[in-house]
Image (tube, rainbow, N blue to C red; front, side):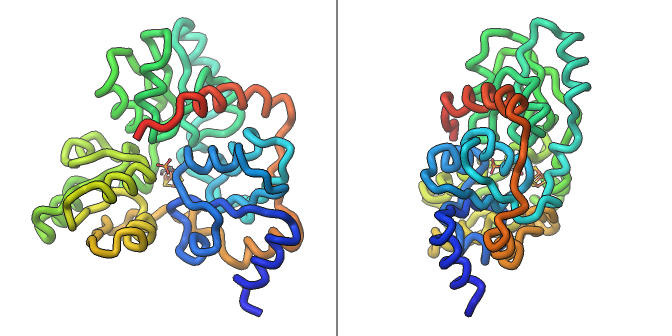
Length: 301
Ligand code: 13P
Ligand code: SF4
C-alpha cells in the first residue's frame, strides 16, 4: 500500500486533521487538509472538530495549535523541526526588558516559545503585525524576536518600537544583490518579499506580504512574472494555484528545519500517536491570552 493511502486510512481511524505550513515539501502539502501561513494555521487549529491535529511545520506552530485547542491531541511528527529564530529569544531576557521599559506593551511574533509568549501582552504574525501594534494603548512597544519585522512595522506606526535582536537565517540570506540579478533576468517581474527580510530588501520590493498574503497578492495582480523573496517551497503552491503565471525563487532561501517533516514521520506519528506536544496547563493559560487577543484582531493582509 502507498504511504499516502495508509495515511488516509489512519486519518479516518484517528479522526485526525493534517495542517501544513506553506514551506512544507510538496508531498506533505499534497496530503494536508489545510495548507497556509502561521495565522491561517492557528485559525484552522482553533476551530477544528477533529480529535487529533497532525502539525506539519516548526515547533512554535505546533505549540500554538495546542495552546489554542488544548483538549486536542497535537502531534508534531519531528520535534527537531524547530525555528532557529524562535530559539534566539528567552523569557528571562524579555522580563529584563519589561523591567527596563515598564510602560511598554510587549508584542510577541508567533515565532517564539510558549514561555516567551506567556510574557507578552499580545502576539502577532507577519500578516497582522502592523495592525496588532497599532491596536495597542501604549506608544512604546517591545517587539520580540525579529528585528527585521520590528523595523518593517516601525515604518507604519507612530509608536516607538524596541526590537529584540533576533533574525531568520533563511530570510537574511535574501540580499539586494540576489534580487537585482533576478530582476535583470526577468525584467518587469513584480518583487514580493516577506517582512522577515532585511530593510534594504524591503526597500527594493513591490510588495511585502506574509506567505498567505503573497498568495492573495499574486492572485489579484495583473502581472505574469513574480520574484518571490521568501522560502523556496512557497513556489509550489503559487505555481499550483496560478498556472498561467511565472515564479522565480531566490537561490539559497531554504528553511532546513521545515524539511524535517516527511511522509514517513507523519505516518509514524499517526500510527504511534506520538510525539505529542505537551505543555503545562499554567503555561498554556498564560500564553493563550496574547494568542487569543491576536486571533480576535484577525488578518492584516
Ligand atoms: P508566515 O506567517 O508568513 O507563514 O511566516 C511564517 C514564517 O516562519 C516565515 O518564515
Ligand atoms: Fe523560522 Fe525562518 Fe524557518 Fe520561518 S523560515 S520557520 S522564521 S527559520
